[in-house]
Length: 188
Image (cartoon, one colour):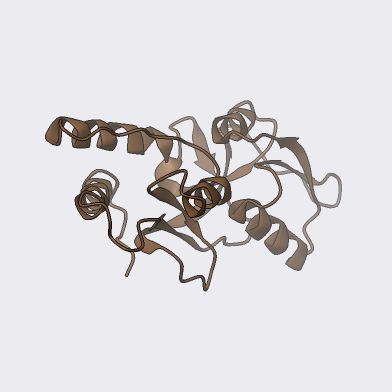
């Protein structure tokens, strides 16, 4: 997602040159906490299933991904190697729950606080990970035969009282740009 958001924010800054944006990229739960403490005006992050906080902006399908030459091991011989973000990540929680529910042997072999670190482990063929389809780099592919991960809903958090006159235009700009560039479907 950061690779898609940066060009959109750059276009927003050119469209609204009088607005000063300061962007911080991080894990959803940490950004949301900073927003709740008033340290950030807005945060874009994932919503857990059934959660109503925030304003939904898009929904996308999640996928198991790995290197082009990655072949999942026979689960009777070796557990599926996973590269994951730290505990508390919604994608990690969902992946582990689905693998457990389906009795598929697995082990986390690589943990990184950075999404780019997790992607690098998958690109190296060391493990598989979970990404939204819109974040799939060209050198990774979807890995068939694993449980369906469903979708993830992304939302804007913060500015609940609408104090910022630019919150609505920024949210609209992000939503429209993502739909146009990635074909993501807007959240209801």
